[in-house]
Image (cartoon, rainbow, N blue to C red; front, side):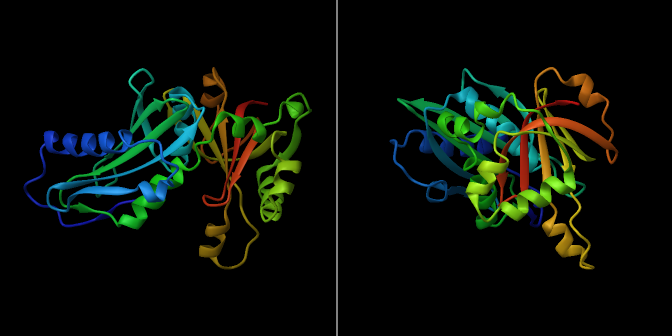
Length: 284
């Protein structure tokens, strides 16, 4: 998400960066409930020398703070963002863009508050002095995450209870990814053939993430060989299994880059991130 600038000797104090975060959060959460898009809400404070904070927010009707945080954890995990802590009582979630050999970890703060029947959710991404990021790139990542938060009614429609007791469909990760991609241009086909159905998926484990005990396990699907590695990588679909509670033993038995089988209920296909999400996943 971040492009590196030239490091300078004098970095901002913690007090300065905290004031930037609070300034953006208080500005956004104090705004009256207006049906603005996440992209319209996006703003930036600070500068390259003293550090900057980017913020965006969404409003979701009928959703609780706990519900928003539960949705956000796997959403952030898919982007490699680690959740550090959540406090439902204060409406604060702390996460970070993990450190790399060239850059220290960068904080991401989420603030949620209820205003009548509307939940305001604001995400603030903070950069230290001497580090820069393109405004449009940050907007894409922040709103890409926030726009996936859905109200309870939408979540219910996406996972019909009528299919909850249906037998699981045995399928490998490559086949499921291909079938979903072939149906992606028609939302009705996705809803009819996949949403709410239970799949027993076999594939190679690509990633395992722990967000406060909310594990997500990812399978990679290998698209047909085209002779163009960059195109194949772009067409690769990730199948993300949001594990059910108390699945520590099942997750502990998994090994990276080794075959595994998990059973989960199809929740959604995200065309933007080219990912399939299965929820309440368990060992076969």
